[in-house]
Amino acid sequence: MDEQDTYLTITKQIEGFYKEKGSKFLGYAIPVENVEEVKEKIDALWKEHHNARHVCFAHIIGVKQPQIRANDDGEPSNSAGTPILNQIRSFEVTNTLVAVVRYYGGTKLGVSGLINAYKTAAREALENNTVEKRYIEHYYSITESYENISLLNRILEQQNVRIVNQDFGSSVSMTFAVRTTNSEQLLAQLTAKQLSEPTFIKTVQ
Image 1: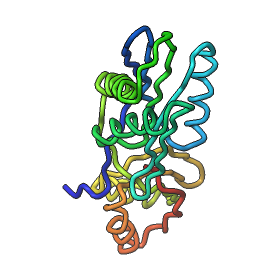
Image 2: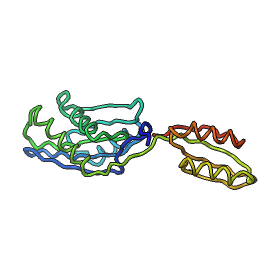
Image 3: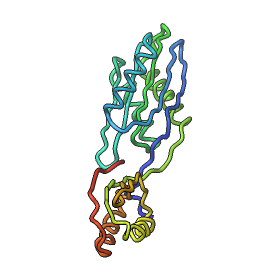
Image 4: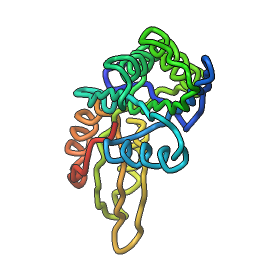
């Protein structure tokens, strides 16, 4: 199997917890698809934990050219965001946001203590999550006559194409998703059989 179009990601929002010298660190591992969603999730955490001292986070989004960010949110430089980011990297996942909410307990932990606390809370959240393999896919739309729909469906099935939706009118319109490594061969087959040419919509990863 060609693995160039696969990646690992987490499947749902899961929490982790760590406590040190009265400070509580609540870790959240959250699947995300874009930076706008990251902002929404961080804003939601602040709303939920409005009495917290810090909400530090890191994310990796994308596969080929990932968007990577680490945020210390006022903690000493590289004591929070970077340890969180390193945990995401250690699990080899993408499209993942990990945020750690800190409730201050009255005792300073020092930089090394902070690094350990944020790292541990992040790791707990990731360890409690489920990691699954997904495919980078091209999305296409196509409109085909009823006369040719059986042939089209047979070709799509051979290429393990995922049908996203179908509309049955005077002809059949559908949107489908195909692994990026299979898309060129699929398009060539459709052309060879003189079927309609699909319209590219987007790439999803």
